[in-house]
Structure formats: C-alpha cells, structure tokens
Length: 161
Length: 161
DNA sequence: AACATAATTGGCATAATATGTCGTTATGAT
DNA sequence: ATCATAACGACATATTATGCCAATTATGTT
Image 1 (cartoon, chains in turn red, purple, cyan, blue):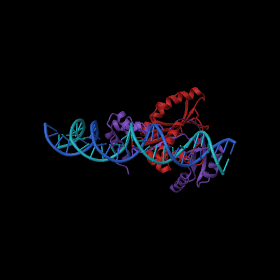
Image 2 (cartoon, each protein chain N blue to C red; image 1 turned 30 degrees about the horizontal axis):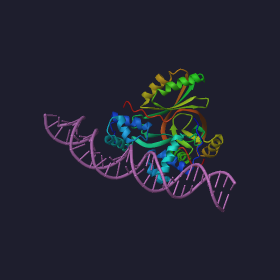
Image 3 (cartoon, rainbow over the protein chains, first blue to last red; image 1 turned 45 degrees about the vertical axis):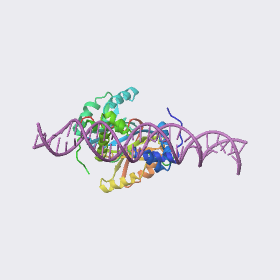
C-alpha cells in the first residue's frame, strides 16, 4: 500500500499548510494563495489525495455545545500482552462512540490511552465501571480529566523535509 | 461569547454527523442525504457555523508520509501551580510546531499532556532536553511513545441530546 | 552550451455547485 | 380556528470546479 515517495515541492507544502487549517477553501482561493492558476492547483490537491497525503476532510464541532462537558484520558493496562487480548479490547472499544481516540502506548503504567467524551461524572462513572472495566483482560484503569484544552488538532508541520 | 442554546433537530444532527466525516461534501449531496432541498440545508450549515457548533474544517494529513515517524505523549509536571507559570509554559509550547496538542489534566503525576510529532529519536531527544525541559518551572517529564494509533479524530456523537 | 524530451503550467469552454430571492407550506401560540 | 412566525422548495444568477489543449518551463543527455 505504501506508494511512491512523492517529492513535495513548496507548492505542495503550501497546499497542505493551508488545507489543514481551512479544509473547505475553494480551489480558486487556494490557487491564489499559493501562486498558481486553478488548474495545476487542483491537480496537485487531487494528487495529494490520491497519494494518501491528504487522508480526508473533517468538520470540527464544539463538543461542549453538543452536551459533552467532560473530557477524560483513560489509561488502561491489560493482564496479557497477546494479540488476541488486544484485538478483543479494540473491537469492544470501537463500539463505544464516546471513545474518540485510542492509542497503544509504551510505559509500565498502561497499554492503551483512550480519549473519552461524556456528558458528566455520572455518565463517566457508568462508562468506566459498567462498560470498559468489564472488557476481558482489563486489569487497571487510571483516569486523568482534562481541565482545559490549550490547543488540539494543530496542523502537522510541513516546512522542512 | 456563549450564544443562544440553539435547539438541534434531527436534520442538524444528521448534518453534523456527515460533515464530521466528510468535511468537503457538496451542499447538494449533503441535502440529498439528510432529505432536504439544497437551500434549507445550506441555511442550516451556515447557522451551525455561526453558532460555533461547527468550529472549522480541516484536511487531515498523513504525518508519517510527511516524515514524522514518531508520536509521543509527554506528561509535564510544574513546580508551582500559579497562573503565571502556566501561562508562560503555554506561550513557549505554542511556539513549537511539533507539539500538536496540549491539555491541562488532573492527576498527581502531571499537569500537562503534550502530543508530539517528531522525525526520529534524535529529534525527540533534542526537543525534550534542549527545548521543553528548559522552560521555566518544568520539574518533571515522562514520555509515552505511541506504538499504534488504533483510531484518532473520531466524530463527536450527535444522537441523543 | 545546445538540443530533445518530458513534465507542468495557464487559459478557456463546459459542467456542477453555491447563493439569494420569493411564493408556499408547516408550526405554534392565543 | 385564526393569525404570526419560521422553515421549506423552486428558480434565477453567480461562483466554482473540471477537463482539454497549446504554450512554457524544467530535465537530462551529448
């Protein structure tokens, strides 16, 4: 699946810079900003999409306004570090829409870090005790609540390469 | 800045559902999918944008292909929990493009969690020792490397409200 | 340095989409 | 039931995207 390396010039990097921040910019304005005419600009965007450098476009929503007042980071440790245990855990976790991120991490303290959105403490308590803790193999769970999001979803740097 | 509550009906929720996953969908297809004609559909999207429910649109890029092979979670603890210390830390952290997320969290072990993208271990070592550890007030730093991203950037649930 | 080849560009015509207006329909309160 | 308000769909217009082609620019070889 790993395609040709694809050399990025300054135009491509500029495109990536801009669309990471303004995903719905029109091709015409994008072309203006990078200093190309619309045709080659669009061709480059399409190439970046096809090479998988641009994965997809997303709208970011205000989770608070949607009623999710609480964000938690949950560190999970497992009893056995076997592929079966991990696969099974992942399958269960995928079914919980409140879990918006799941990373496998190093460190003695935890195997997974989950990022979780819930409405309130009751919601969290239920999710932790009655859903996540009941998944086979989970031996430990340590929660950090997010007091403030200083920033999130910052663009990936494109400058030097 | 907190505007009127804005009651969301099933159309609005459906819009939020879709644009969280396909941020560049055309208004016409969006209208088709939610079962409205283009005019009211666009009006609703604009309203959601103006109410801040849709914060912005972003292209998601493949950080690996951009040369960032390593993702780390860095937990930082500070000597004093004063606004000045925190503000100063945030100001410095904002200047580092490799830090793509910064959260203030609860827990005895750390005050901040940073999500960091670097090219390799050398890169990380330099960033940690020569940049972040030198910020005033930083007393502890514990790193977890991300072995695998099971999923990231999952949509915020919109169903029940 | 001159040349041939390949790649990329810009312009243009056409198609698709967005945007604003207006008459009609649905909604909710009295 | 009546009225006022809000939301809808349809249509006309403006903007944007898309595909093609000639011209230009870059690349690599002798």
